[in-house]
Length: 521
Image 1: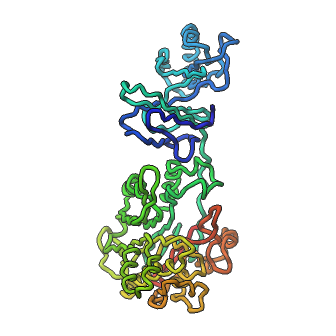
Image 2: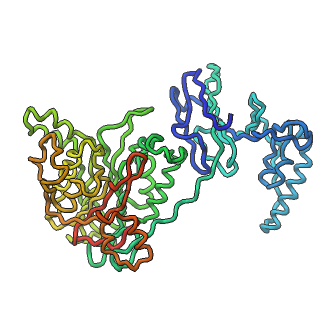
Image 3: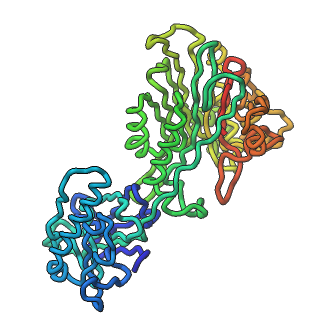
């Protein structure tokens, strides 16, 4: 039945699609196999030829079971391409061949092509499969993965999987998709708002009189978190990693950023996709995964933070990795015995990558302190029940960065802080301290606030808040201001789902060592 996904399990293995059985033209279908090694299986993909009881063009009262694909390719009348049997098609072959030749010659004259049409001989009967319902399927692939083409648009696909070992006499496992669709066009590029009247585009930060660079921070949403429960408003096919990864890459590359900070990057997607794709585009890469994983079908899944920078613009001077769980263990050891059990709440798997970069001028190291800056990339704990943990993680990070800042090195902090504007972690970064009267101050079951340095000397600005000092003459200025919370200066949201809408993602930068000159809205 069209649109129905079903799996037979008599042979001890199963094949299915994890999130959606709606194929998209140009997007790879990657079914999930359980209970058998992929190399022990044979996969065959088919396209349904006649799912609407089409009649034979010769024997008008008989249902068609076969279609001439050459007629389809040459845009000849579709009704004249159907036959009730292979014998019927054989009898009409000379007629078809003549029509194919004439159609190709007309096409060749329009395109000024001097050639003859190389008509295929009668199709191999093995290419056509007729199922028990009398439906004809054209074989289109023989590997586990399949990329639907334009020819598949509007059609239903079928995947048959059998054990290679014929002696086991396994029943084919059948997976039937919905009709193949075409994805909507890519969204329009986000507009660029100048903060100062300097040349350039995208998000820029200027750290010397003559140099600027672009910075991008992006939580890419790990595939293991892109579930229908969280994003039920999103079409199922748009949640698949095979679809999302192409859109993510197009957007990330489109910003042409010299520095890219990604959060929630799933480990296997970093190794198999982000790392090779960005390395071949001239980026160096650092990755730090969280210690704890999420158990899913197929084993544990891990995510982490990844920082990329262009090799022709910067070199890495030094790198640090902060594993908040390891730091928390040392803190818990200093607590009173009656507090240690409560202190376990600090043991979260979040991490941060801190990288000191030096600008390259004329492909050589500039050897100038003004050309050195620090980039921190982090993903802070998410649960609202652990606000004290959020603050502890941010304070731990910023206290370490303060030691770097005392050397006169500018600081960039990029990431998903999982903290709204006005929260204690946000105020600590932007205001340099957390007031003792802050609403989140009493939320301290470990008593950690009494031992934590909740102030710093790093003058930091928030990139999005800088729109408040933007030249209002820009044509998009007023439109974008409406998307900004006038009380906080931050966007109304950077994260949107059924359960939550708000701003959690930021870029903070040293003021006045770095100047923001443009930003993307």
